Picture 1 (spheres, rainbow, N blue to C red):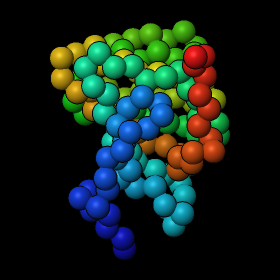
Picture 2 (spheres, helix red, strand yellow):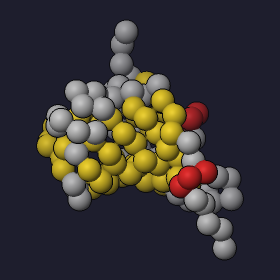
Picture 3 (tube, rainbow, N blue to C red):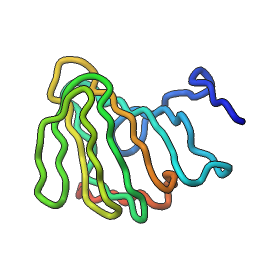
Length: 121
């Protein structure tokens, strides 16, 4: 049994345009990674895709709007879950006055080599 303590996971800025705390993302648990993502008020992540990875956004606090490359553009709030198939373009915008916080659950686990930036400029 392994326990990963949140206080051992520093938050860092990710090129996607949000703050990330890697709660679980290790070689010894390759089936799943869990990250806490935080988007500041007025912020929006870059258009991107994850090759070979299904990602789920589980909204923990705040409100926003998710956009997917298949034409979905929808408001999201606490408790909503967005399921994003591998390779599908995605981004999320904070439309509220407080931080938008969500868990990003990836299967298999997130690896930076799978991240593909789709924004120009």
